Length: 419
Image (cartoon, rainbow, N blue to C red; front, side, top):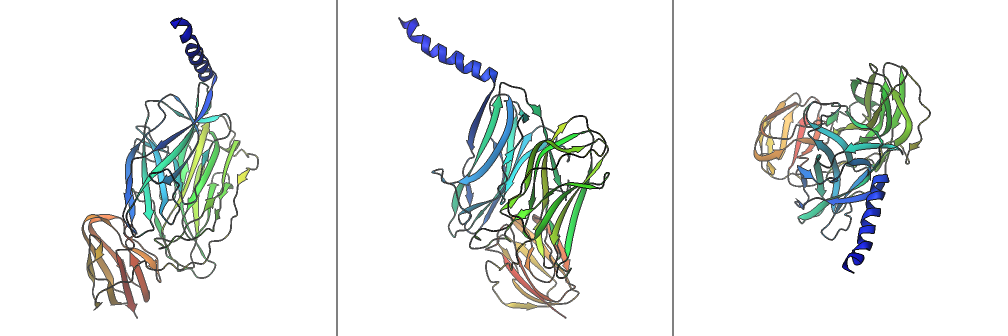
């Protein structure tokens, strides 16, 4: 009788195994450890990330920030500025190092989804990591968790893809940001670009872009063939979180997923170009496109079919004036040429200098800080650092409002440049 009682359980186990062997698709949900974000502050760090425990293929993925009860956090609480997922020990396609960047999500909330029949191969023994940046728009310290969902296929063979991470600052240090000076006048644009020569032939079967405030478009150009096979356009809108800790970015970027995709051949040179408004400054801008490449035979300069785009509602960046989160305090200092940057403050917050002065910031903190223009005649920013110096020559008169982008509500500064 005991053996008979075991039959239903054995039958269920056999059917489950057969279903898996024939192919199964399931959604796996993972949640990181708690992440503490100080009031009106920014938290950024790498961490290990849980991943599927069996061999298979990732076919779609998304991520969000939740509280301890699993409730999704709005931008007025903890905002997901960005999170990048990487496979540890696997070489990246475009940059040296054993971290293959395979998925990223920012304010535009791009969901990674491959066309049917394609998958990002993953072994149960593969290790994942992530790099996050979260922003707290409340006065009190908040704790959040990154929850990510992985659509995973097992028990069947899909056409494998490799992620190709293109960044207009490709492989130039850890910080992929650049500054748009904003000195071009009404209707002018500023372009930052990078190039990649393809080592093999195949097709990009999916892709999407990432821009910051002031972005107009992100173009994937084939320089060898004189074509622009994909342009990712920003959609703007949505309520602005208060207090505002940075210039708002797009709420969506257009993307594509197509089995015919964008054909490329070995030896062809691709260019990624981020086009920004240059009528006013935009600091710590980015231009990133993540593409998924399936190797295969293609003809040189082969034309693919028109891409079916998940377009959104694209348009030009809205006019925006970024305020300082906190008014600079303290006495007014005249004709200074330097100050120090310590933990959570600038040595001198209110300064008047002459035009042509080269000003120096000396970093002496135990944690990283920076100097970033919020508004003023010319856009500029320093790297994140604990030690060392940063210099900027002020050649245009006007009022320069600055903050630390990592501690924007605590560290502010105003420099007035006289003629």
